[in-house]
Image 1 (cartoon, rainbow, N blue to C red):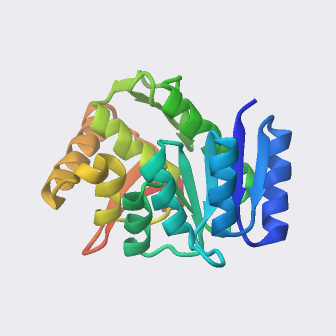
Image 2 (image 1 turned 30 degrees about the horizontal axis):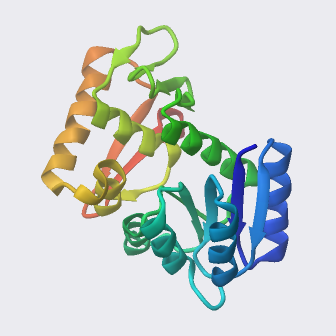
Length: 228
């Protein structure tokens, strides 16, 4: 059984997450501070870690760095921090995913499953926004009544990140880190990637049910057209 280590000093939230993950079929370990988290990691070798940033005695960012220096275990960071520098700091410390509070426990379970599939090289879950769906495994995006459109790898990753954060502005810096990783890229490279994705969606087939909006001096946001 897949072992998930949940680390959060909010005992009620940790219990809810543990309960939800167990119901989803996972074996759950709990820790409520950074040092206990490192101890559980060393003893039980979890398959994935759900890690809160704000922890007593040793903050989650430092726990993330120490774990990453020893293993490639997937890490999902939980935090009330949502600033550009915070997102980038977590990803650069080695976190694979970043979820801001408040969130639903079901959202965490979905991210856990998706991340485990990605790490294992298994087929990815189909992501949806309205009638549009992205099959990351097939590199295809489609919506009702239209044939699928093939996307390049980076185009898939860009749309995947935007779909996971529909309606939320993602800064240029955080998008670059999420798409290219620690290798990084330039703002111009991201701008061109957005341009190519928009062209594929809007010039190939009419009636795309989403729009990728540029937010001047900030970044990009994906919106459902029905929201406009």
